[in-house]
Image 1 (cartoon, one colour):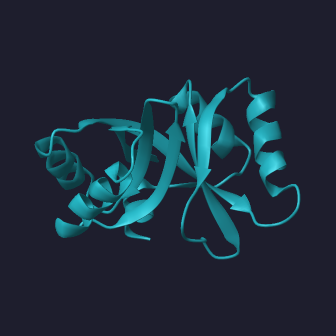
Image 2: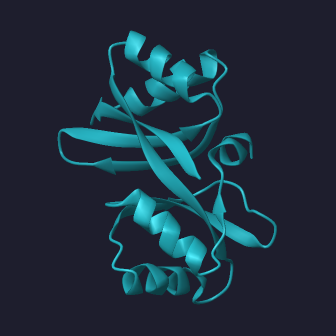
Length: 143
């Protein structure tokens, strides 16, 4: 039920983001979802890719700092209040969302949102207990 995500620390200067995406593209790695958060000096690029270990290896070989973390992909109804309904369930279950971002593809009639939780196992349990579909990692990486 978990999805592997890589996080890459990049300098906040012109061309660094292009360099990372070029390295991944040259290695044949397909980016499925991404989020970029920045400060004045550096950024954190979070990626869901189709080949996590390969992506981590090629980026690290080019001198970037990279780590792998687990996130959760959740089907969210693609309608008004769809996301707020999911967030209400998590709030009622006392689950904290550290961050989230949208996925490139839809899953049927639903959107897919990537979540990072402070307690992943508890979050998955709360979601499933409330009938919310949590996607398997293999499926997400191949969407």
